Amino acid sequence: MDWKSAARQLAGSAAIRPESRWFEPVATTPRHTFVPRWWARETGIDDRPVWARRDGAADPEAWVRNAYGDTTLVTRIGTLHADHADTAATVPRSRERRSTSSSTLPSLILTMYREAWIQDSSRLLVTCGSGYGTALACARVGEERVTSVDVDAYLVESARARLAEAGHQPRVEVCDLTGDLPDGEYDRIISTVALPSVPVSWLRALAPGGRLVTAIANTGLVIVADRTAEGGAVGRVASMAAGFMSVRHGEDYDDTVPEDLPLWQTAQHAEGDVTTSRFPLTYVPDTWDVRSTLELLVPGIDHRQQQGPGGSRTLYMLHADGSWARATAPDRRTSPTVHQGGPRRLWDELDRVRTWLAIDGDLPVRGADVTITPEGVTTLARRGWSATIG
Image (cartoon, rainbow, N blue to C red; front, side):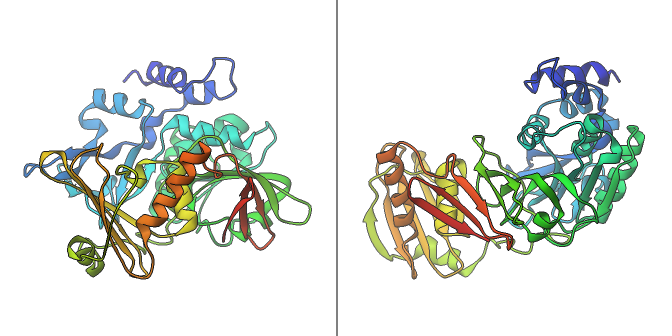
């Protein structure tokens, strides 16, 4: 297997200049070692979407092609890791069987590391997953300066072994990222899983002037903040958008939404209040700033969509408080008919955000200032607008 030339090509395709300090770590790290098996998106025999298990050793050519492509490789669906599945296993792609671990696309890992402004002497706390990002960090600053954590004992065990195979022996521990962290004072904490807010334990574990970089769950926001002398942190929303898996605290996510949720049936069939939206259909999860702003205003909306005949489409919004919305349009140009019910009008909230965008040309989450109190309360603010999480 000629993985070394493939790794050097990956280093170039990940937009790294040869003189960059990250070029050699990518060019010399055997990513295939960390992802010997993975789940690929496919269409099943009944034309339904499935996850299909792939084994690198069974097809070395495909292994190199996938491992050294600048793409995310999903390694765990629900509680089933690809390492433990049958050779020809498939898993239905559904809301109940979400991806729970992966090897993040290399360029995004590097973007997070660059935002962290890692120095040669930086002591790092990073998230583990497959271990590939940890290997890059070891190659950059040395294994003795790297601590890697994951909530999943098998991921920690396998990553530790694969890191050793690649020539690295950093500290790798089982740890809930939102709880107590391994003892130590860190100059950088970088998370490639998304969190609902910044844990207080991070602020305590950061050295004075240390930097944290993390994505915020259910948004496209990445926040970069430096610890202050008072024990909080200040920073900004990064210019790039990123989508990461949300942090989990056990074998699977606690908030998995079943397909047959009673509110889902209501949203599909109830009349509710009927209006016509001024904007065409927008599927919120496909956006960045609209999705992020709406999540800050009304956290926890479940978005779904259905394709209809002749190019028609229906979008749904569901909320745990009993609010729901259904919007249908025959094509992309026609304003949709909207049905809404429950204590809040979710589609009206979406249209409020889109009106804001149409008038101002952007939304204030883009480039917002970030302030984090020592208690972990995070405030985003820009141009007179503010939102608080945590």
